[in-house]
Amino acid sequence: MDFAERVFVVTGGGNGIGRQVVLELARRGARVAAVDLDEQGLIETERLSRTARGAVSTHTVNVTDPIAVATLPAAVTDAHGQIDGVVNIAGIIHRFVPVTALSDDEIDRIIDVNFWGTVTMCRTFLPILLQRPEANLTNMSSLAALVPFAGQTLYGASKGAVKQFSEGLYAELLDTDIHVVTIFPGNVSTDLTGNSGVQKLDTGTRKVRSTTPEVAAKSIVDGIAKDAFRVLVGTDARLLNALTRISARLTTRFIAKQMKSVL
Image (cartoon, rainbow, N blue to C red; front, side):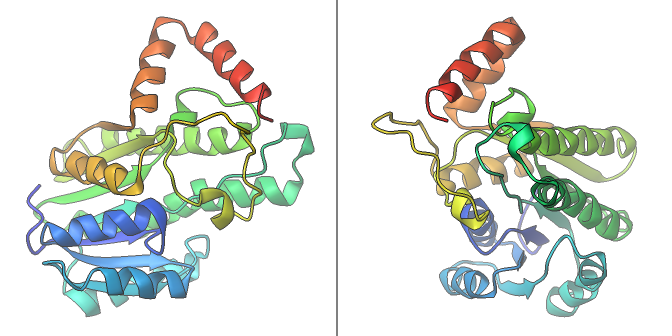
């Protein structure tokens, strides 16, 4: 897909990977509607985009609110005249604890943001994207949807649901002009824990391999440009995905031991 003069809606655009995807798309000539609940974060994203080729508008919206999401298409069209793609990046994690230690409210919040937020955005924008001569729909799953991580089981389940939903949309839309891309990032050096209201995991002196948000965003936008089916972001994502294909059980046991040592 050529990005020049295309219009993309990006959720989670106020920080982290979402912000960098907004900036990367704008650098490549796209016009971008950055969506987030964090108004101040959006202001900073817009400031950082001012030297880019493409224009960026900001929209303070909670993706778990269907009524608020329903107002987005008109707001984006007013700002940019059209909509050619939606990139669902917004997501959160929960506390690093066993499933039984999570409250009902914590579980509901994870599912609402990660899964229902993505579903609501897709259902709202799909009728519009179907009217375009070419369009893109990109959804953020996770390495945790491919390899289980003890202490983040409900997060992994929510991202597994996004994987099945997104790849199901790919199958449903094969005969249309919408390209569906699903993203599977490994560990990325963002403040996901802080933005999720979760205490950071203490790894002690252990160094955890991570990808920068800038590199992650470039991989994601490259995947959109190539109409990729899946985009694995980071060396850890590619390695663990390969290992689980060799032996899912051994890979799961290996990760479980690693998580046990830091939980």
